[in-house]
Structure formats: structure tokens, C-alpha cells
Image 1 (tube, helix red, strand yellow):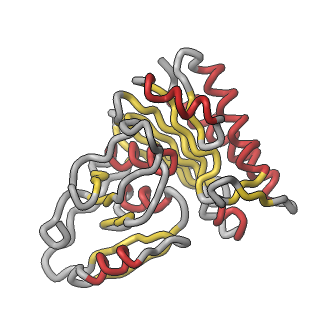
Image 2 (cartoon, helix red, strand yellow):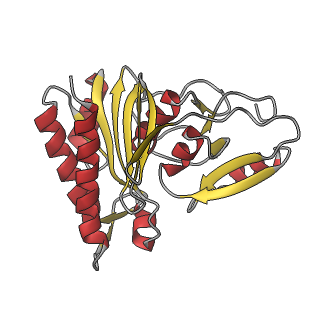
Image 3 (spheres, one colour):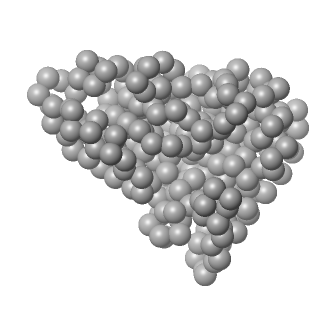
Length: 259
């Protein structure tokens, strides 16, 4: 077993390593999939992986920056840590503060515990079977998703800061009345979890490490993360050929306004 606070502290420690690089000039590299990589991604990766191996040596770890062998080994794991050391690298490069450290525990395909830490904003979200919580300015509060908007009410829709697709725009157009808020990284899911947004339709590509930690927070807050258009629960580590998520929707519950 592990102590939640130890994992939260580890995410903050990784955030401090990121901030040391954020506050100076840094190089940007391009990975094979053409996504950006910085030394901050790697510093956070090593901080978290080393910390998890010390705290929970019996639980394997899969990171966005893990090597190819570990990506292949994962299908034999029932329980493992899934981490994105720096979610929102594009936001990091733009220096807009909307990036996070994501640490999730996956158990039999489900995100059962997750921590999301935004070091610039100094806000932390976490969730497990005991509930969902937000820490900001030294205060810890329980969080909960909002109820589905009533007839005639405005739907508060959160969308990607960098990746709004045509499918997303068409989905939003189909809602009765909307107010769209753009946000980077896994903070989009957390806005739904804390009731600051009603729905986040992600109708574009993401990887499993992008969503798992915030997914755990959403479910702990009473919400759902559903594959779209099937509207079945989003699961992890079910397809050996890919670590990409299908399209999904983050919400309090299903609604006939969009289902």
C-alpha cells in the first residue's frame, strides 16, 4: 500500500523540478511522433519514476517518457502507475502556466487514484474511493461535479487550448446554448470535476497518460469519462497495439442533449 500524501508530495517535487527549468531558457526537441520534448519533461520523469520505485517497488511504472520495452511489457500488468511527467508541453513552451504533472494508479483497466498538480497555478487535484479534493492557496476542499444543465440553461463547455477539432466544433454547435472555455492539459477534466464546467468533449487524439490521473479525479467527484459515441466507460491498457485513447466525453452524466 501507499500513502496518498506521499504521491501528492512526489507530484509537487516533480513540479519544482519543472519550475527550475521553466524560469530560464530551455531547449525544445522533437520526438518521433513530432510532439515536443523539453528537458523539463525528462527531469520530471526521472523524479517521479525514482520516487515511485522507492515508495512502491512492487508496482510497475509506465511513463510517457518510458522506453519502448516498458510500453510492450504493460499488457501483463494488472496494476501499475501511469504518469505524464509534463502534460501540456506546448503550454509549457508558450509559458502560459496551463500544464500539469499527472500520476495515476491503474487497476484492471480503471483509474482508481490520481493526482494532478499545476505548478505555476499552485493547484492540486486528487481523487480516489474516498472522494475528490482540490488544494489551492493552502486550503483543501472537497469537490463535486455540477448537475446537468436544466432546460434552457447554458452549457459550460471546456475545450483544448491547442487542439480544437472540427468534430469538437460540430458537437458544441449541437448543444442548445453554450459558453466555451479554453484550457490546456488535464486541467480540462479537472474543471468538470470541480463543477466549473459541465462537459468536456475530447473529439481528438490523446494518450492514456494524458487522461488517467484527471479521470480518477472526475470519477471520485461523481462524474463520468465515456468513450464517444459508444458512451461506455473509458478503460486503460486494453489494446496492445496502441496507447491512444478513443474519443471521449467528460461529464456529470449522460444527456439526451448530446447522446
